Length: 317
Image 1 (cartoon, rainbow, N blue to C red):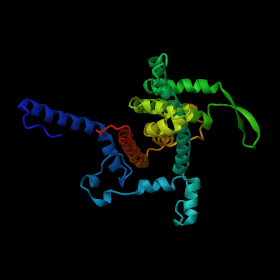
Image 2: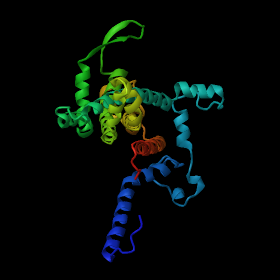
Image 3: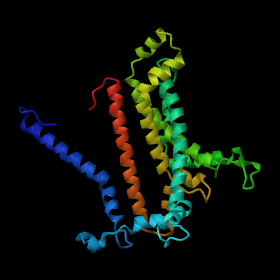
Image 4: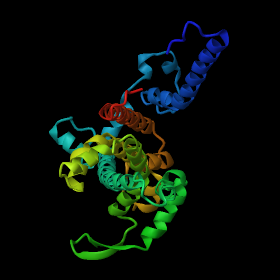
């Protein structure tokens, strides 16, 4: 925003100082990302900038680590890249398998988080709701409590819960919730619900309740008024919260380390294993791809925020 012509020298000094401080804070926040991205194209198996990279020599850059994401874990990684190669890639490549697990867990955890979080936000925004502040504090506590404490509590709680399941031979059996995909999904859903509550509550704070009363006066029952009037207007907030919940699930590693079995790998857990067992710049390639996905999701969240403001008659900032 341009300064007005009548701004004093002190106001101009503060304006430009403020811009410099914002730029420094932004640089501090994104500096790790700026470093990771070029390092993922390093032609050498190092986590540092080589001399060729510093001199912008094309020989110092390579896509070998991105290619390793495709071939790692395949039965025949040197085969010609035909249909058989890509079938082997889909069925056996390690990073493909952990991506499948992460996406499946993230989708189901997001659906649970969006449903329960939206219901909770609807109740917490009603003026007659008792103990609203106390209940809100409890529901968003997973965002505040250190994840190591939450993961430890989930481990002991899930270890004592028995759920029905099917064994390898297709027979019915009872098993503990810990070490199962439903257990991981529920844990990720618990961590994602606070994001949905916050975003939906923020959307409902600007919702005109007279629209619901108008629908009721025209004969709509509460269910019809909610799905035909209220839900379309708060949908951008629900989707935004769901995207935050999905990113939280997609990035979670501590809860997975406590709850998941050894063969239940996700992308963050595979990265953790790679750092512990075999340090490879391929991890930087995965990190770069995750950064791109996160930026894309945040862009969608911002577009939804602007759409929500337009629907509610608020001019976007």
